[in-house]
Length: 555
Image 1 (cartoon, rainbow, N blue to C red):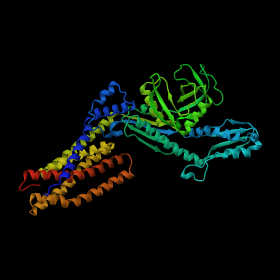
Image 2: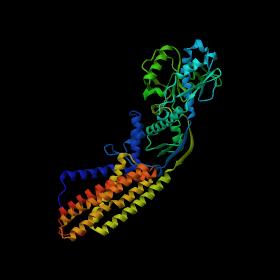
Image 3: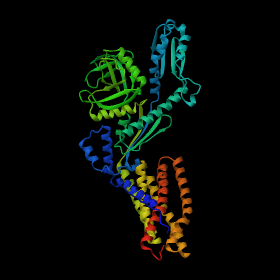
Image 4: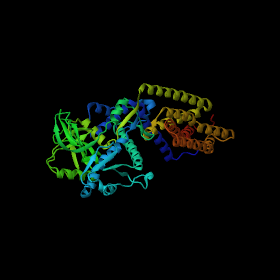
């Protein structure tokens, strides 16, 4: 048997050794998972660790691989939510944000339209009353000039707003094309923000996908309960900066038209009256990081983008000496006095924060504010007991399948059957190693794919061994028969595995959910079984023949 090149032997052995090391953390799943979570939390806190986190981090050697197979919702338990996005909130926000621009546009022709004021209107509609209705054509033209093209493929040729007149009122609302484009943007933005929040919170492999026109499905394995997931996702983290009109200790005080009465976070019993329209918002925030103030108390530093920095700088320049409210989720967390202009567009949020609260707030601000409120239509908590039962059932199936395959190979091929079983065990180990390394999620159908792969993994060995039998019957020596068996069975092995590989790829491409979970492990198993059945088995047989140098072999 022609010896395998030294460099090929080295590569095969190195890859097998890597597989053993990379799969090893899954044998100590709870300990390694606690280690990984502790490392993530310490990094988020910029190196600050609690004694519990230090103990968890020390529970697994840092020089060993620590990647784990992610367990799906059916194996690990977790939370399931179905939420509806209130898209009408976005229309209202757009109209509220458009009012200052409409007001400024009409002020430019004030000598024609007269006094301008905002009239009561339903949400999503902006009504503006002018005192000189005879100038309505000029007013409509001025407002229509604010329209911009719809930025979507389906909205080509349309503008974003419709401007009409109703007596002395100008009526502005979003066009149908812009509503469709806004719906798509809102849903996409909501998906990304939820994904950012869930990922940065340290959970693993969430399923977050759009369903229908206004619904989002959220499934997060490993989280404690649906309520915990709701509290994380439902936290708006909407940061805004408002001019302060006044402050009071009367919770029932009337703030006045276009003003808001909001409670103070630090000053118990104190309420701030602020202007409803913010100067800058969290949408113009570029970065937010946990920090410390001048008194070494936890805080959050922030930095605006170019547009936000200009607005922030202009306002602080023109309002030195006035109070400026920093509002988070309808609560005034700070209302500092503007002592000097702040042209750089950066600052710091102080309050009664712990390190954990400052870190979490920075995470939420970086992820951004949800563009609209969400109503949770369905929520379920899948307990770990169900997942444990599924894992136990999967283990039993895998063990029974492995014993059956190992026994069949030994009974059919004797010593060579043991060689094939060594390759089979390495195949499963390498599969687990690859799944852990690439961060794939293992589900119950995925376990079925692994069990099926164990049966298919020895198909190549069966073809090789049967071919070796034929060559031995033809009178070849053991070494020549083994070499011919591997060489002449290779084309049949390749054909069979390519068709299986194409099937797995198509299942992953057109399937979803459980089908994809099965396709991942099935496809990966075909690739790894090709390596172990052909190269590992050949190397083992070659080492055996060179060591024993038998005059005859029984296959």
